[in-house]
Image (cartoon, one colour):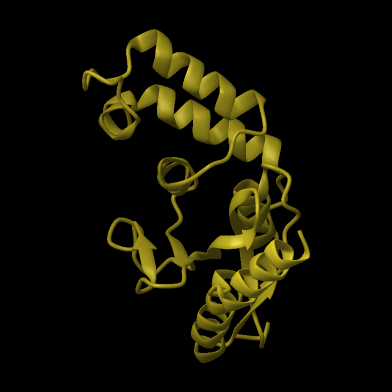
Length: 179
């Protein structure tokens, strides 16, 4: 028994710590951008709370995750053709039905279901603000810079390995708020 426990401990010690690698890579990126991480609670509303923080500090807009969820769901309902092709399909490749899409939007608006690329798209369009996402192994993702040029972006970070439960978003704040 002790031998198998020792083997398990050795194996764990030899595994790559993706959280540390991700932290290092994101930190390197944001330092060069003059930004630092504002930690957001991992409560299922992290995307919306990160954006809310950005709106408050960068755009003087007071809002909360509930309002941002409502805006995202409303935009998605009004522009379903922009979203349905990108939602998961059934095993036979059939796109979401109107009922499934309606439930998706209801869940988005009324539960702590996690948000992602589609919800960022909807929030960006509804607020008419570009969103920039810093992540580990990708260049800076600039969402709708072309549609909303010369507009101060919302800047957030995406973390795949920060928490064991799954993906997470944080707000990125300017180290020199005068800029």
